[in-house]
Image (cartoon, rainbow, N blue to C red; front, side, top):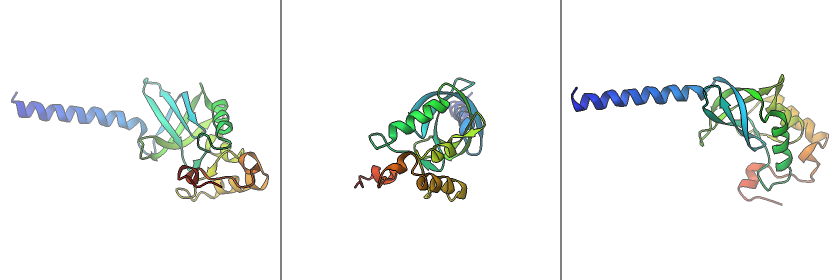
Length: 165
């Protein structure tokens, strides 16, 4: 085989391998796996059955950042709910860091909604117009649940930019 043809064949083979790996977490896929790591309230790592790890970020919500009030509470909530358990993730898309953005289901519950209901996340309205999620946040605010007990909680997107009281 000529060197150019061999190189072309190799590039095609690499491209197919890369494509097949990406297929595990492309948009609108449903993936299942065991949660093996919790980064924070809205980000975790799961192990798929084929031994591939996937970093997942919960879609349409934003939990407090590290060193922000209620961050540890949100992280513990997520850990208690899903760590070392099998979950199903409906992948919406990927973020700029390559994480799969999705909806996480466990024990008949939606973790995205559960965090809002517990007052441990904001509905990320910049990326979502979901009325149900907004209603869950509004209800938690009205009932002063979780982080809504604070007089003036700072949204994580402002915290990241250094905008604090």
